[in-house]
Image (cartoon, rainbow, N blue to C red; front, side):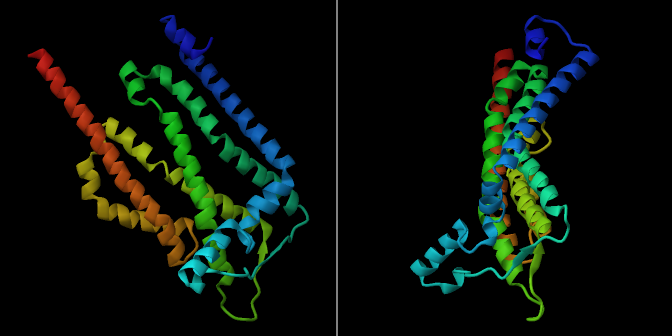
Length: 281
């Protein structure tokens, strides 16, 4: 019997019932990932030629946009031109395994909103009515922030990082012959990392509701947060200042948004406490 139906009937679930319910949520989530992964596997030409290898080509949307801006602003440095790199395969099984790997990653990314919805369906019945009301719209917020983060990581961080590394040279005699698995790993890591890091406002909201984080605390440790963001940006991006700054700026903006979210939560809680005090009097 579904968890929501059990709750409506006023019954309590045993530990085994919870495990059974969780198992079905996980099964449906895995099925969603498999469906998207199979679709990505079938659409091999689009996935590889357009998505994965797109940031390695000079006609990629980001490069064309920067060239248009370079012409408009009379700043030729913004137009990167050719990307001096050749993608190769060094193992006989690598192309097939990377095809499966990339399909799974795309399936995971596309299925993330549904996976979170399944997790929320499992957690929601255990919350109090007030907690449910306070967390209304969380699935939409998490999904939108994830999509925004993935789009930012794919169209901004990834192409700029690839362009920098492809043009970085220790000596003229060294050619960039990049293994195909390295390209897949880089595109996936940057896009998904940005998707998860864009969840900062949601995490701040949950911590503020739990009383763990306050606006004053976040303001006090703002300088520490900036350092942490720069370090994190340095870890997930190539070792160039431009890529680090590009990914750090929106994270700093999200940190400021998170302070506003915490402030709103605290004000609402304080207003509610005063109303309860007035009613008791």
